Amino acid sequence: MSEVLTGKEMLEKLSYSKKNVFEEASADTIKAIYDYAEGYMKYLDIAKTEREATREAIAMAEKRGYTEYKFGDALKAGDKRYFNNNGKSVVFFNVGKDNISEEGIRILAAHIDSPRIDLKQIPLYEDSGMAFLKTHYYGGVKKYQWTALPLALHGVMVKADGEVVNVCIGEDDSDPVFYINDLLPHLGRKQAQEPLGTAISGETLNILVGGLPYADPEVDEKIKLSVLSLLYDKYGVTEEDFLSAELSLVPATKARDIGFDRALIGSYGHDDRVCAYPALTALLDSEKTERSVMVVLADKEEIGSVGMTGMQSDVLVDLIVMISNSLGADPIVVRSKSKCLSADVTAAYDPNFADVYEKRNSAIMSCGTCMSKFTGAGGKSNTNDASAEYVGFVRRLFKEEGVIWQTAELGKVDAGGGGTVAMYIANHNIETVDLGVPVISMHSPFEVVSKADVYSTYKAFVAFIK
Ligand code: MN
Ligand code: MN
Image (cartoon, rainbow, N blue to C red; front, side, top):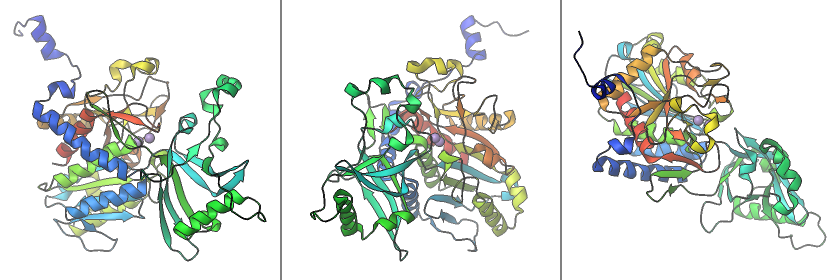
């Protein structure tokens, strides 16, 4: 016979509801939440591309004693190393002192590429008093959002002799910025009738880069020539050097507090630096852990995790092999005992677009880091559907460590969907589930997150690798 409880007591005992991180927090914790956001916002401003995110993450880790690892180097228990994957992806790892054949490796995997506008290989031309660069967008962008916005140019150009030139224009307040033209509403009557997806086409995303003709009446395309001469003066590059370049346009804006109470952060590139930064700082702050831990900051997630620097490459498994071998463990056994949080963002429930969400199973702002047991689309296709046992394991861990967290799906059934790196890691026989920060206006030039959810994600990662 069960004890006699009031309805309120029974409700408390049996029912589940999400908790708001701010509401549960002490004044000290709220201060910690706001303080943590400051460090994250600095990282956002300095790390807008995967190359910059890699460079800055390595600089942060080197300050905490991490040294570069190259395949073939000897490893031993206690080592803190990083593998720089072509300057575009990086894996930090601790070789642990515990029994890796029993405990495996704890892996946090985030990505550091974000949707943006890339240049074509032969980009520069002039037309009607203006010089432009042709582009090919990268990742899932809503093209109309990228017009009439200050843009900065980031990337590298490799010269004929192999010298790599770093380019970054538009971030300093004294720099010029770049721009994609849009149509004035006065002449936009037909455009306004077009669906959002086609009103701005890919081939109209041309970057406005100049308007001053070169001072020589004898040459054609004077504005193009004057742009080339400026690039030559500043970087020593010629038009042919665009052939071997990776140049991207990203919003020239900086991360800013949003709201009267500054509870939220607006920025380009939260997806997925908002998980990469907590993963990295969780590792750097977990100096006492005896575990073997890896933090992967991957490239190319936004275009399918492809290529050498994407999560589908063999680098993760190769590193597991090297770590296992160094400790005299079988890498197949180590993989089977390893556990991973695929650290990526999810869509936050937006009451302005309520019809694409199922509210009970949506991520609510400030209710903590969000677990997605599955992502995918059209009947759970293309997802790692994590096991109940593994979700239960993570749940117990978070309960022990007092992490406030929630679960969600990416929108209503059949409303759309999305994928993460989770399924590629799970393919290696590694338990994996998605966990990350809910985002408003994901993939837009200025995305929004809650400072409470960023901090909750950091706390979750610390708990996971403890
Ligand atoms: Mn992502
Ligand atoms: Mn994304």
